[in-house]
Image (cartoon, rainbow, N blue to C red; front, top):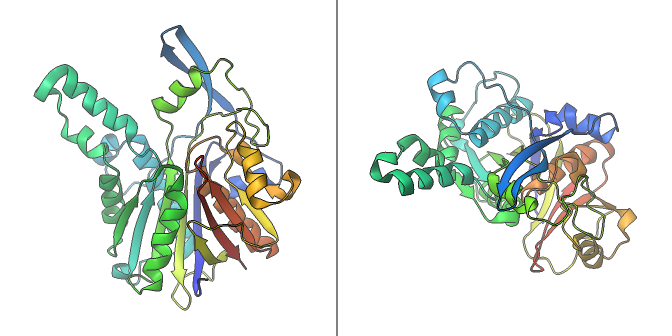
Length: 338
């Protein structure tokens, strides 16, 4: 069990829009995302693939135009959402009292894959002349984390976690441990992924392309999505907002589901996935929460599922376990409490 760590700020960006209000409206039934379509070139021709795409973000004016031009889309998504979460935790425009005690953890499943592919494609086709320093920097998740820490004046420890669908709760574990071992008083925890060509390309080769994501369906209903959730984790007694909810535990390989009133899962419409969750949790499907239809299918969608769970815990006080199962049977769980 973990004592003395709270979520004091939340930022969100997905196909629903930006901000906590967009999540609240979706939970109230007032908002659903709109599908957009990408044309994917395959061996059998151009295939139209539906995706859930987040809106373009507006960066603050203090980010120079020369910097904005060079930032890949995923960096802009992370940057805008980190600023939102920090404003939620510390107040808009509030100076950071002790930036040396604020750490940063970036979690991502696929990271800067599109930029990496573009960089390598140019080198393969054009040789050394095609090597772009900007593309090289944009192709590495560590560079994105470094840019965030410098631009947001976060001078504590910095770490990047890139372990596919295990990135969300692995990143939470790092952030919680830093507070527990007194490496930081606050940790800005930013988790997410942008749509990459790989997502649409895989779906384009399915015999039937899903047009509606239903994570509870027995067959595959995957509709690629994207998004970022940012959490400011704070030690009790430190300056900042009193908190959205508390983190009671982060379990990276539990043998069974935590025994709490509510369970929220990171299902995203893979074939047979919902049945696997029901078996592992030991509850019928109507007693398990999942909101992937709000933001789409992507490996770190569990971060947005966790943001939704945190908002619900802050509202009703019901202890909640957020659960992630991998295809090879490993489980991860995060327990939130009031």
